[in-house]
Image (cartoon, rainbow, N blue to C red; front, side):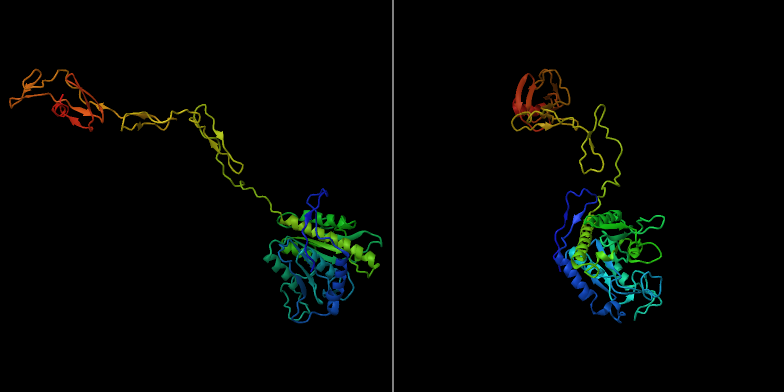
Length: 451
């Protein structure tokens, strides 16, 4: 197996989508391709031997370790294929003949790109004609009406690997150009006589099929050879149930059929060894670069809009007359965020609290609307009743006093409420006191302070 290189975006091509170069195809790669095709792919006469019972009708190439594939390679005409006398442009009694060196091409592209692939083995029912097993099948143990094993394997792999987005179905064309012609391959993507360059097989849900077609054609053309557009065989969406048709119409993928000219899949059978292998190398390089480009194209995630379903409130908050709300939205916010200006943002508040005296704490009397805290010292004296203006008698029966029933004069009671500290003015005397907050009579005060 060849080591997989890191791919890189080519600078200066000036194209969108981005063309990418894969591994450089060498003469050694082409020698290995041709040797492998003769000895292993076509060796032993299996290509014309009816499928033995219990044998698989295909060879499956898994993706390289660590690769998340976006491209699936197919070649249903590496060996002979049974068509049971259906209309067939190639010679034979309902048998499609092998397409020279296509198996070796698919295996080399798979090795150089890491993409999975499948090619038909033994003489078995044509996977490019039947989606299900034909009632006339000659395959031992096959059940008419069941899904063709070749296509069933494709479906199972795609279902297990949703990263696969496109099928490249590689074929050999019988059409030749002149000996010095640069035409190498025709790219089929569907269409009709009225729409010859159709794109009926480019139906992938991500809508990148047209870009993939551009990458495939451009990568091959860049090698100095020509890839035509639906001029030989359209590959899809007509009466024949091709692999490209199955990929697009059944699996829902993009699909392109490559009809390769005989002189661009030549290992020396048609032209001199050097000329043949130079053409083959250019063709393989074009496909390798296209696959590398598609791997980038289909791996790019579409940027989803996180705000697509956001339900944003209308308008701005009411900050009061003459005050405008401020937009405080961040770059990641789906909806605009508004804030009313802070009226206290520039307020200059004094430090600390007032000094209410030793052991006395100021009281916070701030309101919600205040920008700065408001403090006050606790009340000193709360007089709930206005005392008499007469000077009270301090003795029995003195002026201002009255005799009670016991014959003793009584002083008028002055209901006075004391705070925690204060000055008492009573009968022309002054006294300092520190007292708990409660009611006292004049007698109590006299007894306490001796006034």
